[in-house]
Length: 132
Image (tube, rainbow, N blue to C red; front, top):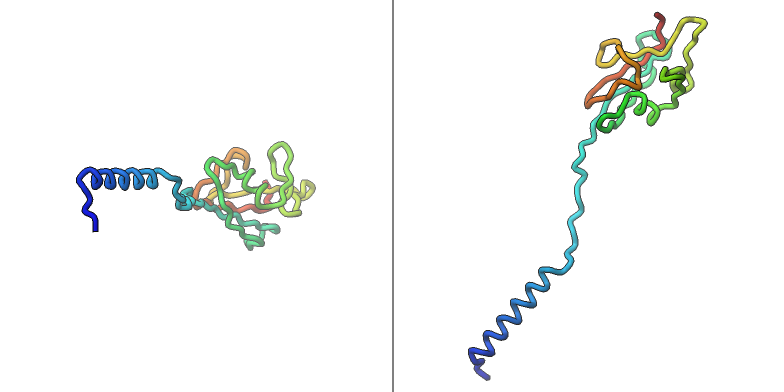
C-alpha cells in the first residue's frame, strides 16, 4: 500500500472539490411549480319564469377584473345588444310582455350593466326575467 504524499493528497482533495462544484452547477430537475393563483369563484343563478324558483345554478371560476358580461359569455350561451343581455341559454326576453333580463348581485338589484360590473370572489348573481 502506497502512502500518499502531502502534495498528492492536496491534489486529490482539490480535484474532488472541483468535481463536486461542477456537479452542483449542472442543470438540476426543477420541482413542478404549484399553481399559486387562487381560483376565485362566483355563483350565477337563472330564473327563467321569474317565479322565485332557480332553474339553473352554476359556480364559475373568475379571474381578476373580469366583468360579469365576460364571465357570462364564457359559461352560458349569451345574446346581447349594445351591452344589454337579450337571451341566456336560449331564453330570450319578451319586449311585448315587458319582460327583460334583470339581475341582482349579492341580493341587491344591480345599478349598472353586466359589462360594467367586475366580479369578486364569492359574488352571487341572480338573473331573472322581470318587468319594470
